[in-house]
Image (tube, rainbow, N blue to C red):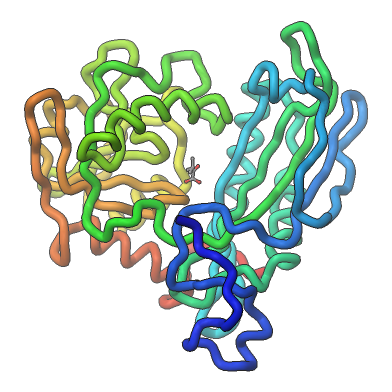
Length: 354
Ligand code: COI
């Protein structure tokens, strides 16, 4: 259930601090929409450049029934987070990476994207306008959702004549409620992406096809679903909303981003952190057999952050993995979140102050 606004603020906040916060039960945040005050909107019309964009009150938008996004799914989204630090700053985690990924996705879907500078500036403006919705330090983050969608009317299959770049936000907590690790089901029936398709970009169309698997899995004992490659059905690819890693010995392996797997920004950051503490990182095909023999399995994503996998079930086999204090996943989670929340100094140049 989404947290509701409430008349008296958290007892943890002093009266002066209350003024800078929206009326939210910060301790009850989940990954569910809590609408904030403002959103950013810019438009592109064929033959012109992107409009400057403006911050407007958050609310419904009006588009043609014939819009490219509604009829042919011409749309991309991004996801990134803003954090409030103990010393009072609001920071963004690697927004430039999201800006670049939108460029790649726009090329695949034949849309003109905003420039990386416009993207990052727009994200900053949107967060500033909604700054009282950035949770107190350690209570979660403000999730930022940039969209690039074909809003122009188009009947034949083609690129829409107008695109809208829109950013809205929502304070969020953990993607999965349970503090324990995930219980994954390997889906050997549905495929998420195929070679030459759009699995490697953040197309809106990549996500609703996973819902059927998720519903099936969650109606049983599972928390999420792991998809296999479409070509052979032998290698692991992605979980419904995030990337996957396995650990065996000193080697951390993750499937390569060669077209069917989203190049996750958390994936890239975790690989770097694991390398920093002496692990070897291999980006290569990882078979289901190897998955079942791994010591640890974990997944990464902006919404998910880093989550340990407790069990994987493939047909009639159920494997249990190492989780908890001593696990690499716990160590990497702490390293990443300490940087993101300003608990340790960011020597990577990943955090951007607003
Ligand atoms: C993100 O981690 O930002 C995602 O895109 C996941 C989302 C589909 C919930």
